[in-house]
Length: 262
Image (cartoon, rainbow, N blue to C red; front, side):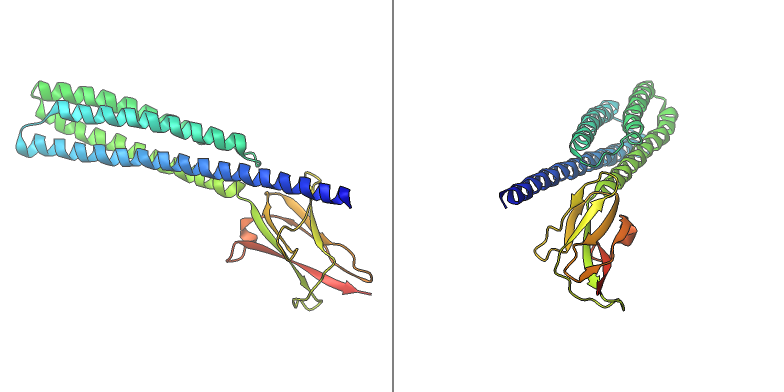
């Protein structure tokens, strides 16, 4: 009995550590998304500065190249900081996740944010030169280049967010509940207990809800769900590769095991 209790305690501690690790992973992926959204907010601010400069060039006749350059430089510095945050949060998430994931598709997108920064700095220098030399038409034409670059930076940020959201879904634990049914598919009861077997890792896992029917944090993979025999009764087993398409409206995968009795 002591060995059984100790084994159960070890499983419980291991499960808690896994849950904490995945919580840290999800939190840092959320932080990475927030930092990326901050990039988009900065893009919006600079777009407003571009519109203001356009008004100064075409209507007011008093373009302030220095004020505009200051705003762009601030934007560039902020984006650099946010890029560092994005990379850091994704690295922490990757190091903590119990489900390995790849950020290879995100890395070039994040680097692109910095490339657009370089383009903005070149455009800003050209804009200052044009305004200081009184080349209004050249300055007006540069406004379109600014908008194109800023839109590209914003769209890249959107792609980064989508990639991170995809990772979050891919590593999100599954909730699986076993439903005992009779030969006609009607719900029934079975009290001998259930378990599942991860066919990839060889690990056996056990329900963690009070009723002893649900597994609330299964990692993606292939599992065989089964039950213990109960004197002259038992259930069928079922092998399933966990998928979001199997989830019901409550986000739960229901596995029906047919009860049989001799």
